[in-house]
Length: 358
Image 1: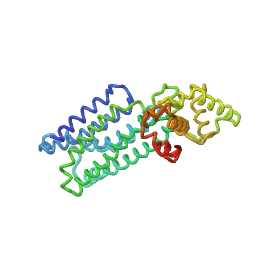
Image 2 (image 1 turned 180 degrees about the vertical axis):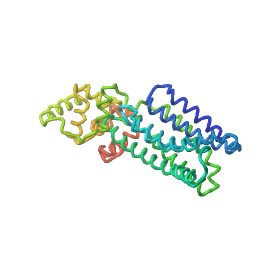
Image 3 (image 1 turned 30 degrees about the vertical axis):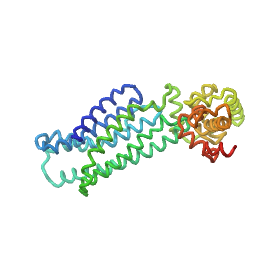
Image 4 (image 1 turned 90 degrees about the vertical axis):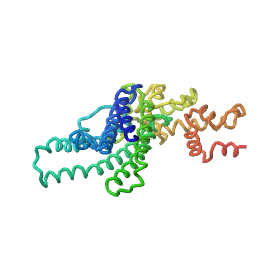
């Protein structure tokens, strides 16, 4: 029953992701939808074996089995498009599907091939490569998401809605699923049998909740996206974009803007927004913050927010606010980020800071 629920839920989620109701992260959602569809196919294969229909639907089962080779590449491409500012499919991505095409072609040709050691060896090699392929792609996904966390801090001042932490957590669950899969295939540790269907079903529900609620990671216009892409995925080493005089001039303008407008109090402040206020390019402003202050955008803005929070914490006017209220009033979006950032800058928690000042 649980496998049946997982199969139906996976195919339904795949359909919904293809026609994302909020029209956000469309290309990433489509590839995630392909991954979820392959997950549904894997559950369907288990279901077919459970009810002993594998002989009756032998060709269909072979096609379902071939879909396993689409799972890891589809998940990886979904991560690629979630973490890219400019979403564009390149022909070089097609090589990811070479194992799938080889396995599917062998399945089609199997009835015409004479049985022999070469055919047996070919199937063994391709099937044996599936666990290795899965492990490699999971590692690549982790690396890509780690790099995304770093890149995001160059662009936004609050990362809670774009850091894709749910996707990192899902990869951890996927590692557990792979270990269970290897157990079922090689070690046959039976106590895991009872828990496996629950993990599969919970994984589908987890993906549905977080993937459909994910905001647009880089919600900028096309011109801004082009500049952002050059910052997060530079093709060449960074060259000095500004002269010393230009850096000094731009630095004075930036500090004057921060002091007079207190724009850092905007909870969703981003690099493109600040660049627009400065009437300069996104790339130049990023270069200025990186080289003149030796900081990323996230750290630069939150430094101002922490100073604001320190004033609010010691002001009798804001005694009615709790820590969360102070965080929001200072420009932060979450209490957790506020506490971590505050301790990083001051060495104390907000509560301990107030005690030390009093």
